[in-house]
Length: 109
Length: 115
Image 1 (tube, helix red, strand yellow):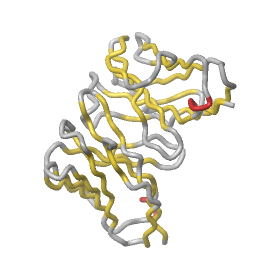
Image 2 (spheres, chains in turn purple, yellow):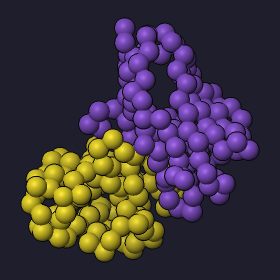
Image 3 (cartoon, chains in turn purple, yellow):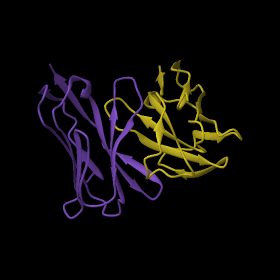
Image 4 (cartoon, one colour):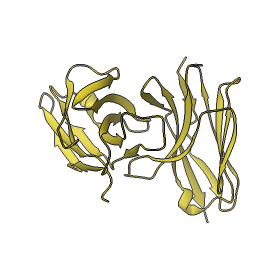
C-alpha cells in the first residue's frame, strides 16, 4: 500500500464551480498536512498548511483534515481559470516532506 | 528578493556522465533541500543540507551527493547517470531546517534529460 494516494486526474470544471481535491494516507505518524500548487514549468508553492483535524479557510480555499479516517481535502470555491494547475497533497514526517502524485486541474471559462 | 534560483534551467546528458546542479536559497534562509520530480509524479525527497552538512536523506543511491557552501547555496551532483535520472530537480529553501512550516520555498527547477 502506498503511503499517499491521490487521484492524478485530470479534473476539468467550468469557471465558478466548487472543486474538491482529496488524498488518503496510511501513515498515522504524519504530523502536518499541506497543499501545494504547481503551475506548468514552475516549482510548487505552498497554498495551505495545517496540523490538526478540522477545517482551515483562506479566501476561496478550505483545507480539511480527518485524522481518524486518514483523509485530507482541499476545496476551491468560485474556481477561476487561473486556478488551473497541479495540486499536490503533502505530509510532513520526521524532517521529510512526502508528496502525493498531484491532481491536474483545468478550469475552463 | 529573487527567491530561490536554480541553474541551469535545462540540461541534456548521456548515460554514464556526471552532472552538477546549483541552487541559491531565498534571502535569509539557511537550509536547502533537493527533490526529484519524475514526469507525472510528485517530488521525491533526495536530501537536505543545513550548516554545510547533510541532515536527512531519502531513498536515493550514493550516486547522488551534495554540498552546501558557507553562503548557504548548494550543489547536487549525480554520477554515472542513468536514463531513469531524467526528471525535474527541485531545490527548496527554508529556515533552520523547518520543513513543516509555511517557510519553505521552491525554485523553478532544473530539467535534466539523460539520453
